Length: 311
Image 1 (tube, rainbow, N blue to C red):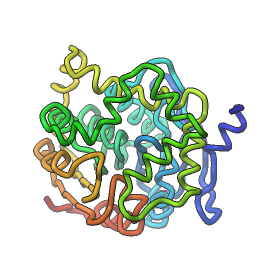
Image 2 (tube, helix red, strand yellow):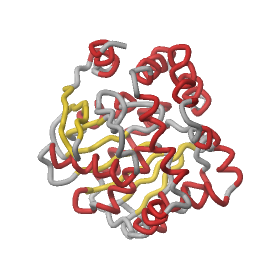
Image 3 (tube, rainbow, N blue to C red):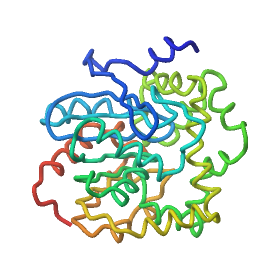
Image 4 (cartoon, rainbow, N blue to C red):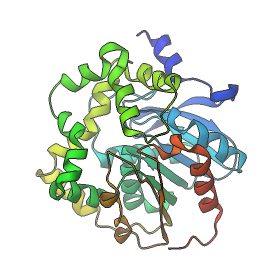
């Protein structure tokens, strides 16, 4: 895929011809692509695997209409952001996020993260609390809960079999890009609830994964998460995550999520020393923000506007 073709796969308009502002932002020693819409307090949206900024296409419009500056960034190594040879541990990826907040000239942001983006949002809120105004996490437990579930819960270990498969060298990258990214489409459909995504949406994710080096960079964070479980750097990171989150937190999860069990995610509130709200979406899978965007956006915006979010 040539560079112009790669850019055209990522720098795309929203549905119904809504145009977002695409630009590059320098932060933490790399260049990050963002898609931006609206004016007001900053809400930063962090995607998960196997996606890129476009997963937040519905929320960008809803947040902008509600009076927010909505910014969806591509994580390091994905979409239109730099594909660096190193830097895929969660502490550094979280510094990417907080660095982008600073580069945007904002004092802080409400962080909204899904899947891996949720893991990084938890991390950023613990590491750089002054830059995180509020925290919303989707389909991802707190990092210490995730670690515990992966090591002690056989059902969660089985549900996360794809992560164990990522530990092989080179094979996952080839699988993700074979047949024009067919595996990406299969994973998204299998991880969704009954409301399956449109074929056109799935093809958008497949094209983005086939941009050279993207597949390798997309699996590197998961390699770190597993390989560091018994390493000093992983143990040290786990200790750092004991630091409680001290900002209002909204935790969203689909009841039919086959990748992250509800039991694994529930209980993350023990690491939050601030108002914490748990919201379970019945009948939705791993992508509630795409499977029922209206209900998800309503829940998120009502919480963002609530001056005193409840526990």
